[in-house]
Length: 483
Length: 130
Image 1 (cartoon, chains in turn orange, purple):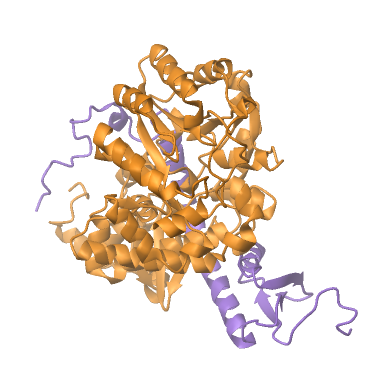
Image 2: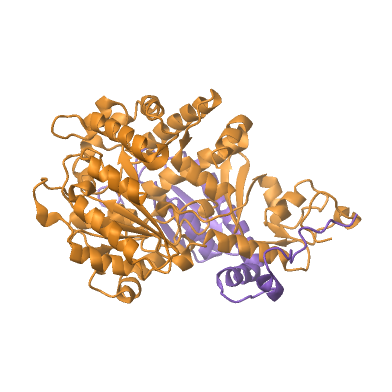
């Protein structure tokens, strides 16, 4: 019997006794008498305090109904073979499979110029006519060269701003040059834009080169326009028009949208979600406002406590689940990311929920002026005067940027496996490290988890999703359909 | 000492917990205390006897009921004790799993690493004996 199939067991499986061994596991008091227990591979179980005590003190009998589930979840092992170790190692390795092939996402800040003056904008912006804030082709050439030194088989080029399309000539140059210099990688291009400057020329070029788009949509017109002012106060109309044009030319899936939650959003999650549904999106990302750039200067007006965001998130998720129940398929993206980490074996590509941290490993930023940053948030901090996350410039060698810069010490120091408060946390397999956030909000890469709003927010959301999976079969079924 | 001379303002719901060093490790006590550092200032001191004295001073007047706080702290200590048992018993397997997962070379069963995707090295496709 190979021990991998639970359907038919031999008589030896039903003998009394306790000869199992404990495998590495983490647990946390979840609620009442319930404990959440997770394995190294990310499997989880809910156990009573009594049962957990029995397991750890080797009082659990093989006849216990939980026994096979504990084996299957890699919380205990009961034979002398090493098959369970191989399986667990394979799971662990799969969860970290992105590490050997860093870096897949390369963000090019084509310009800092922008025609919007958003309240939460994460970078300093300047007026549209200041071309000294544009990336030059010479800088782009160096950045493309660095990108192709990455070992990743897939390279995603993301154009960022300011408003990236205000320097469309450079976008066109980078796309053409990257394709010309491609040495066999799978290349993907995404333009992050407010869509206000979309032209026929841009549409044609994007159609020819298979470029997709990411835009901002904060909700209904009143909310969106209040958050994202531009001359004419027509940001929402421009966005809606741009989405429609992109879909007509490039297909429905060629454009995705992101929203940012401000204080004005908190009491209207349903209206925001309805707006996404009305515009034909099948997903919405209920995003927390980042503490960078102008979001800091405007924090008194647009900021909020973490608890209020969590309440907003839960209310929004409940509404989305209800829409699904009524036959309208729409997903919440952050929930989907967390569900993938809880229920699926693969590695997550979402930078903010990775350990080791995703910065540099999963994504890297080439700023308009040739500076290289470990993450977009690191670049935003630099615009505020804090250059901690600057790795160097495009004129440095790849080896210097990745191996002889602050990058590796920052990643190493902030790994959850060594962070006080995270080392014992049962949510560790589903959570991540965010050294930029903790540096910004708490003064170092590690942070103080008991008072970290990153920790408070993620613990609340992940525990809520686990609760829904555990307590509500119908909701669990809907959530699983998002994977 | 009056509150005027205290560097930290204290409230009536401050709590002192005594933890027996023979039962709870210092590592466990410090990890547990850290978990409470969001709402409490914490002072950990060894006594002459077998106890460690943990003083929890509420950071604000809206602190927890002392009896509830003490109970919660002791429960967390107990959880920490279980974590230490698990960590000690599973240390070797954890190290082997990590080595196997992160190494480019097979650490455990070499035939698994060398096998083709469809050779079914662990017998997943083989029916169980009944």
